Length: 178
Image (tube, rainbow, N blue to C red; front, side, top):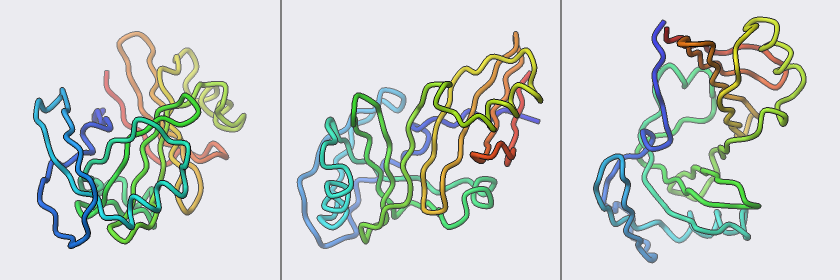
């Protein structure tokens, strides 16, 4: 299987077109991976929904989302992210987060990187059992309407694996790179 590197930067579509009549402040965003600057206008309902859910968020930057890859749609049912959606990058409680919203201001999901020790015991146990000798490199926690899922990157020498798991340790998806 092939490991596909999917970063949050890859989840961004740079569209400066505003198809909504609502107005808010726009913010120039420079993304070093794409070396471009974009102006984006976020609908008031989206910004208001975000500010209600995360009133203490700081360093907020808004971007347009790209469509969710087909191989993730089954794994994250009821979480269809497409190019009409917005997402915010922000800090809250000294942690970097990403939150996705529909144009109507409905929250879709929130993602953050967490420490390995924050994984549920069932997840840690499954990883130890199936991937003995692998080191946990990074853990992203995805919280969405249907619950929580974990994206865990593992490494053992030159071998790299990315797995998606439920809090009970069920493996939903596996990608390998050797």
